[in-house]
Image (cartoon, rainbow, N blue to C red; front, side):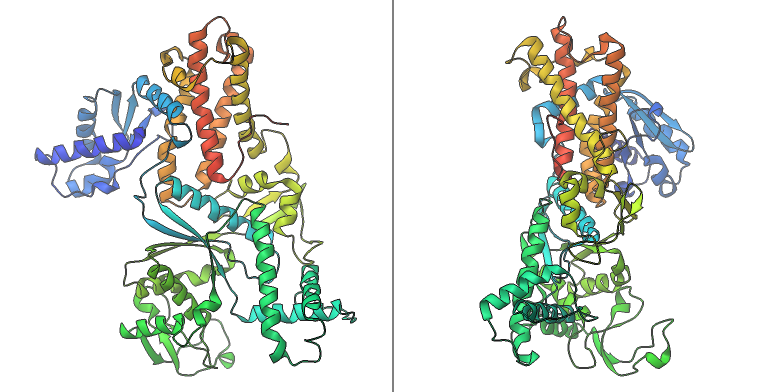
Length: 586
C-alpha cells in the first residue's frame, strides 16, 4: 500500500482532467510529477511539484496552476487540507484513517510489506566486487561488496529479476605476477631459502599454502624448468586458491554470487568472444585505423605515435576514440570489457549495473559508449562508484595487516567486529562519498552507533510483545487481531508520527531502487528507530503512553499494531541491507 503512488496517480488524473476541460494543453510531460513527503513535516503529509514542473509548458504561472490542482484535491475524500505554497508548491494533509490503513496493511503483509512491482520482472545484471584474484580482499573491496549486494537485494524486492555476477580478471598480467609469486612460495615449501620477496611480486603470507599445495601435488616437477613450462599450471592453481579464499571472505558477509565469469573465457577458441565483438563493431562501421594524440599532460616523448585499430567512442559521448589492440597485437583490456558486456547483453541483460572502486572513475565514459554501440542502443550500463574507506580505531588510522602485509583485509575487519556492523556502516553513507569506518565505534552500544540503535529498536519492539503476552496471555494479539485494532485510539503526536513513517516505506523502496541508493534504507531505519525510542522514553515519563496497559486491552492492541508495523519495516529494511534483526540484544 503506497499512499504516495496513489496520490501521484490522483494528481496526474487531475491534470489530465484539466487538459480534457481545455484548461491545460494536452501532451504535458506527466512523468515529471512526483509526490513525496514535505521537507518540513509541519507543512502536511504529502507534497507535489506538479505545478512547478508543468507551468512553463502549460503557459501558466506555477502558483495559478497550483491553485487549480488544489481546488480538485480538496474534493478528494481522503484529503483534509490542500494548499498552494510559495511560488507553486502544493502541500496535502490526509485523514488519519489512511495512515491507520497502512499500519493494518503492514501488519497483515509482514515481510512482504513494501514489496514492489516497479521492476516489472526486468532482467538486471549486477556485477560487483570483481576483485583481481591475486590475494585477499581489502576493506575497500568490502564497501563495493556490501553496496552491490544490498543494491541487488533492493532491486529484487522492487520487482526486478536480478543476477549477481563476479567478473574474474584471470587473463591479465597481474595473474602472471601471481603465478610467479606462488612459484616462489613453492620453492620455499620445498625447503629453499627464498630471502626477501623481490619487488614486483606479492609478498603476503596468504600464498604460503598455495606453495605448499603445489609442492605436495607436484613434488620437484617444476624445479629447474623454464617459466614457459610451469607458468600456466601454477597460475591455474593459484587463481583457484585465490578465488576459493575470496568466496570464503564474501561468505563471511553473507554474499554469494550466482555467476562467476572468467575473463579468460572471452579469449578462448578460434572465434573468441573478443574477436566477435570487434567484428560486430566493424560491421556497424565503428572501427577504423587511425592515430591518437598523446593524453593531456603526458610528455610527448613518452607517447608512441602509431596507427592503431580504434573504436569510435567519440560517436557515443566519449572524449577520445579508444584503441582495441596493443602494439604486440594482443587485445587491450578495453576490448575484453566490450566483449564481456556484449556477452551480458546476449544473455538477455538489457540493464547492466557495474559497481567499481574509486580508481576506475576515468573509465566510465568509454565503457558506457561501448555498451551503447555494441547493443545498438538497447542496453544500458549504470556504473556505481564506491569511494575510499579509511579504517580507524578510536580515531587513529589503521593501515597494516598481519595477513596481507600491506593492507587490512576484509576478513580481519569482519572477524573483529562482526558482519552486521560492517554491512550497516558501509551503507550508512552514500556510496560516492568517502567513508570513515572506526572499528571501536561500530561496536559501541549507544545512540551514536547507528547499527546498534536500529537493531536495538527491533529488539525493543520484540520485548514489547513479550510484555503484552505476560500481561494478557500467550495466545493474545495475533496478526488478524492486531489488524482489527481501533487505531483511532492512537492520538499522541508521536504515535501518529510513527504511522506516517511506516507509510513512507513502500515509496522508499521504489525511490531507493530507482536511484540505486541503498543508503536511503539505512537512513530511514535510523529515523524510524529513533521514533520508537523517543516514544518509549515518553512512556517512561507518562504511564498513559506506555505500550502495554494491563487495564486497557483495546488500547494495548492498537499500540501493538503500531509496534508490529514498525517492527515489520525494521525487519524488512535490515534484511535488504543484509543485517540481522535480533529479538534480543545481549
